[in-house]
Image (cartoon, rainbow, N blue to C red; front, side):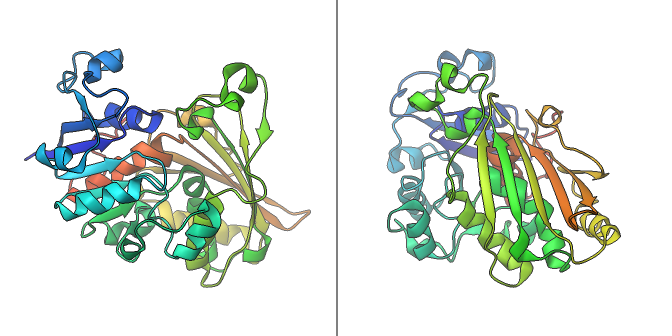
Length: 345
């Protein structure tokens, strides 16, 4: 089978590194372009010695200029760039015939006014918002193969939305009662110089941040609202914990159905999904079982005292929450097996 020529734009960050790890050994991907202004001219194997010996380890980073990217023959570009920056590259590369999988937040929201509310600026390419497909494979699989522009979901939204969507669709919980707390590894903040992210600031410590209105809340409420068929406003509190990667999420909501229906809804939605592992009633998801993979583990419990259902999930924020899910989208987009390049445990 012909291999698809791939570009990774912003390949030197933590998400870019995860994309390289997956794509360098992907059976149907040929890496032809990696970009980084800071590391232009250096080889992949030089910057990341772990990849020494890989087929494309000698590929050199180039400046992220759309003309130079297109000249490499790349057919699909992964954008591992900050929000506000990715949109410009998406617009330019779409004009040059590339298909885009964007890992930033630039195309996840359908309403440019919501984008401005949560991200503080006017949307840089509002004309593309209606075209973008929200790339949550277990929910939007049918729309992905024909897409030119895929918006890969955020890490927190994936860990929160997948457990909740089946219950909201079946009207088993009260949408107004949803409360979520998540804990994430430090890599979720990206590779940047920030005093609060230094080892001595994070190690042996845990703290909430982004309260009361973390940016991912906009994306979460949008997708949950679609599942519920009504506007969803919820409470979400993220926490930083002293691990490199991994997200552990606990969500509770008032149960309007029965515990048996909760289990049935999750089984119906995900029993045949390779990357969703259902732990059943009483199953507590653990990040150690998902880091380095594209799996999300989901367990649940019912609290009879409060009448609330507890949804317990764990994923790798760089895997199912970013690079792994982006590759899953790539596989669907190109007609490959959904597990290609992702069969790691």
